[in-house]
Length: 278
Image 1 (tube, helix red, strand yellow):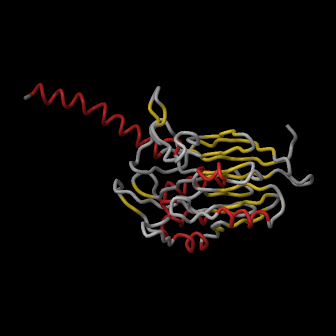
Image 2 (spheres, rainbow, N blue to C red):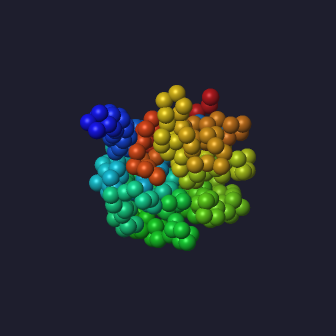
Image 3 (cartoon, rainbow, N blue to C red):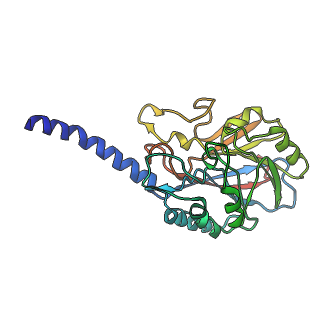
């Protein structure tokens, strides 16, 4: 019996160590990734714009409490962005949590975001309930955040076209396209999932998205197991260059399924848009 207990202990210790490591990674401050994007149709006299892309907040315990989100808001503000884009999944819907937060409490730290042209958000699949309803938009708007649901807005030199959630059948490509075409200037598409990229008209050179968590669990030598995408690992993480279009996918802040991250650290992106020729 003693040998059996020692064997079980020997088996459990590595598992507990991996869980502790995964939880610690999920709770760490996000990495800031930086990229300069040269837009061919950038207005000649327009100054460069600093844009933060953040996604998948998934506010829930134990890893992403409102206090952790407040620290991340401070991290974003310290970069002095001209614009902040939130690519959906502010809320959380999972069984393995120490606490789930209502929309009022989950969105409260976002009111302290500061950017010259404001904050723009789209909704993700976790922001909708199983009956395909959401209570999130009024709370985001109360925090001073513009919510785009197949709509577009011009902010400085940049037009942002925001797609509603694909997985709950809320995405309307024609409505999004009509809204974007009505506004001048270079246009980027903000979507929770990168899965809309292959079906977009060619006039949109850049899609900004989240949803995949960069796999969330990326095993050594094997890599990510899944990207929760209809396209497999095609859009799993980072900058994906395709003919005529780039897709940028952030790892996000929180987690889904289990509150662990292994091999896929939290991140957000600081993007500098300009018109420099390359």
